[in-house]
Image 1 (tube, rainbow, N blue to C red):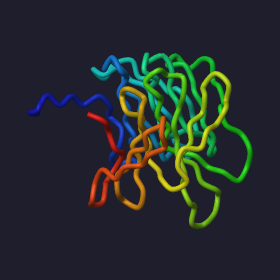
Image 2 (tube, helix red, strand yellow):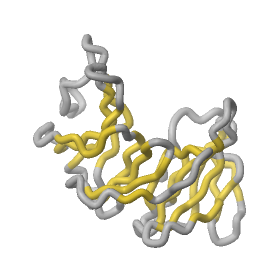
Image 3 (cartoon, helix red, strand yellow):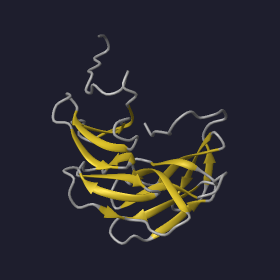
Amino acid sequence: SGMGLVKVTNRGGLDGSSVSDPAISPAGDRIAFVQRAVVPAPVPAIMVIDADGGDEAELVADAADPAFSPDGSRIAFIRGGHLFTVGVDGTDLTQLTSGVGVTRRSPAFSPSGQEIVFAQAPVTPEPAWSIATIAVATGATTPIVSDGEQPVFRPDGASIAFVRAGVVFAIRLATGEVTKLTDGPADGHPTWQ
């Protein structure tokens, strides 16, 4: 099977189960992903597996959007519209957000691991997504932009790229200056190179 591809799970297929949202650890040795099984119920779970396909385990049930911390020791995720973190061994489950009427998605750690950026929106038929950061240690939330989703920190932490109406933008955190980066529609999450 060319191009160095390695099949690491046997999920998906005729039983209706599926996998999505892969996240690779910073060291490249582990992969977190969402498994949606059909039986006994279609509840998503975050699984962690070695990159070579060994040592697979369910990390947390009823969860989505996994993102590794920069040191690979924790995973941020969304459960019930709230932002959580958990150790990669399944210990120290911590809920970072609370309240009702707001849902969240697309968490991503800052390069220092001290903050997580995420998209949030009121629970309405046509939600208006905004972007905020949260301090992992204190839970203090800071609004970043009022119209955007799919955020990701720049590797030096100075900016956050995000998608607004299908176009990729970046906001410089020190100044609040927003720069349009693409002219056409963006498909998927932006990634800094």
